[in-house]
Amino acid sequence: MAKKVKVISAAPHDRQKKYVLNEGTPIPPLVDMGVFTKEGNVAAPMQHKYRQINRYLEMIDDTLEGVSSLSVVDFGCGKSYLTFVVYYFLTVVKGIDTQMVGLDLKPDVIKNCQAVAEKYGYTGLRFMRGEIEDFKEKTDMVISLHACDTATDYALYRALKAEAKMIFAAPCCQHELKLQMKNDEISLLTRHGVVKERVAALITDSIRANLVASQGYKTNLMEFVDLSHTPKNLLIRAVKTKMPAKARDMYMREVEALCKSFNLSPLLLRLLTNASAEHR
Image (cartoon, rainbow, N blue to C red):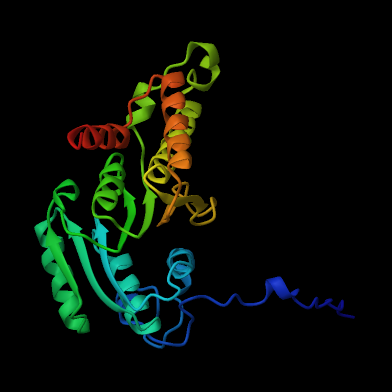
């Protein structure tokens, strides 16, 4: 006699999650990237990528109340899967009048991305070749996904100089401070390479978040995707606010104290210090 199998009903939190971009609608960028099938279903091998995209859009969506028009730049856009998805989300899903720029160094990448934008009929999306630090246009929103090492610092700095109202930066590898870190009193944090690397990465992003906050932004370090999917799972989200000078000074003093403790001179701090000196 066959043994009966007990069926347990799914708890409410186990039921299908409602995403910002739900299945059932063929979204051209996601179809071309292989995330969606032509029928609008998530391809089996792309479940993690689908969740990553939705998580990023959720964090953007939280900041869009009352927004009817936006200028956006994606620093280090690469093949631009995020650029296209964000543009689609803002224009089609949210109905926001959007002018967006994807910036990258590789001319072949820029050429291909521009051709794809024209193919989709994305008239408000254009691609430019150039260095992040040379970008001078003002913009409402800056996004940056996994800009490597100090490229994230340049992206944050240019976002601040462009007077961006919203910043979404997911850093990638972080080498700068690992090479500088030294503290003889707590050498157990710098003795072993793997520990030093992880501590340096956390210190790097903590300093970045504080420095952005010191410029008058409400800033959060958020888990971008589950750590089991990728170790590159932090995102710096910042929204411009009317922050009192006392609070801004506190954030800067915290950075200075930490840098003194570990003998650090982070690029973003140097850029902001130099810019401040030029305006004196």
